[in-house]
Amino acid sequence: MRQDIHNSDIPALCRACEARHKGVCGALNTEQLIRLNKVTRQEIIKSGEELITEKEQNNRYANILRGVAKLSKLMEDGRQQIVGLQFAPDFLGRPFSSVSDVSIEAATELQLCTFPKKALEEIIKSSPVLEHKLHEQTLRELDEARAWMLTLGRKTASEKVANFVYLIATHTNPEENQTKNLLLELPLKRSEISDFLGLTIETVSRQLTKLRKADIIEMQEGRKILVKDFGKLYHACGH
Image (cartoon, rainbow, N blue to C red; front, side, top):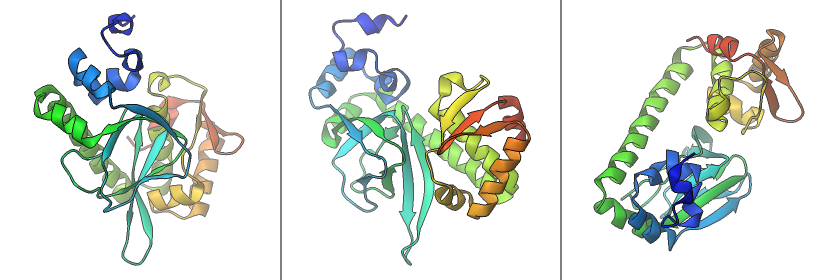
């Protein structure tokens, strides 16, 4: 059991928060947590609601406590491209940048812990550990973007769809990603999955059917999928 859950010096909101223990707030000491907690609030964002518009000034940052956020870019001709997904306990926002370079939308219902940009940036200036933690997340996102470039550029349609299912399974349920019979809900509609993977909707549907026939997944009501064999799913990704 984590000792700091029962530490009365730590704000009640932070004691059992997974974003605190696994996310950027894990780099804060008790005094810094208390300072930030005074201006922190938790919010529920409905699926489909936009949090940040591309090129818009944003005065708040957030930790994702639950759910999936969708990052997208708007092209000159009006088309929109999904460029990434973020999961709990990811940090939303770009420190010391005046505007966002992407639009951020709730792909599923989101539970966020939000705080003013100015308050966090003041703590960053006096906390090399927090600055290092944010730098680590940026590098992790860069590594994930490079891996996804490989998926989009070199992998087959079958491998792309398997990679997408594996991504959702291992990020939305990180504590259970080695178990069988894991039930998950896809955060994107099939039209959005097809855009994200550079495939047609029909191809996405065919490849999901292929995974089902291979007894790797089981399709359930709505967007729900039961992962029946993680080993086979991992192999289907082309690793």
